Amino acid sequence: MHVKPIVGRVVIVLMLTLAVVAPVADENELTETALDSEARFDPVAYAVGWLIADRNSDGTADYAVQVDERGYKLREAMDFNLDGRMDDFYFYSNNVLQRQEVDSNFDQAIDIWIYMWRGVYVQKWERDTDYDGAVDMTRDYGRP
Image (cartoon, one colour):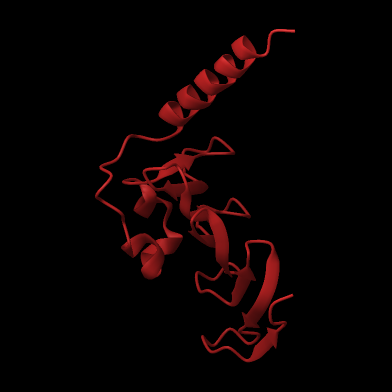
C-alpha cells in the first residue's frame, strides 16, 4: 500500500484550500480590534490577518481563524446561526483552547464565558442571564 502519495495529495489539497479560502495577510498585522470591540461581530473585521470561510456561500464570512507562524490557532470566530454576524469566539494558547465567549441570543453582546483547563475540561463558566452586560450566574468547577 502506498501511503506517501496519498499523504502528499492531502497536504496539497489542504494548502490549496487555505489559499482559496483566505487572502494572505501580513504576519505582523494581527487585528486585535476584531475581538476586542463591537467590531468583533462584523465579519468584515476579519479580512486582514485571518483565514476566512463562507460555509453557506452567501458572500459573507461565517468562520474566521487566526494562526501564528507555527500554524497554531490563536483565535477563532464563527457565525453559528449564519445571520451575517459572528457570535461564537474561541481563544487559544499554544493551540489549546483557553476560553470561549458566546452571544447566545444573537444581540451582538457576549453573555456566556467558558473557561477551559487543558483545552477540554470546563473549569468555570459565567453567564449574563438577563442580558444587561453583567455576569449574574457563575459555576466554578475547579481543575479535575
